[in-house]
Length: 152
Image (tube, rainbow, N blue to C red; front, top):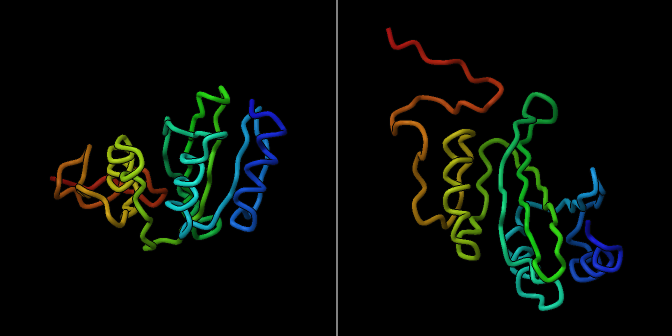
């Protein structure tokens, strides 16, 4: 659990870049504008006091039918603080996200999986191609509108 001092520090450092903050089951979440993701993750990683130096999870969820967006979640860990932070952002269908693979090598695989399952593209990604499905697969299996193709 992230201590209140560090929650305040994150809010102070990121300021108006934060849309909202909340706690959920002991985890601290910040919501940001998707266009700022690379800069914000860079700041959190480079700050010597916070040192969020590890990307442990990174995934998407389809909310297209509810509010016309996809949600993207990043979980960063600070070994200095012995705690994690979730960053959330929403993007519209067809919007392109900025890759964070320059900061975290494992983001490469997470972003490829998100692309393969949801069709979300990542700008400046070193190898944006399908990871789990064959290259000519006609759809994105984790989207709510997915219908398995008929191969008969």
